Amino acid sequence: MSAMDRMKNKAQELSGQGKEATGKATDNPDLEAEGHKDQASGNAKQAGEKVKDIFK
Image (cartoon, rainbow, N blue to C red):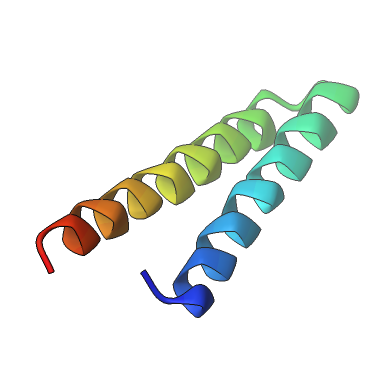
């Protein structure tokens, strides 16, 4: 996994955490759900990259 991919995936996770927190603070369930989605997506991408690294 390249360092750039790691940073992008981590940035997506952190962005999701921020959206989730903002959604909770403003009582906005849509924004909170979007934050959860972003976090899950970032985690899935990291897992996929790790699997690719195993088979190199």
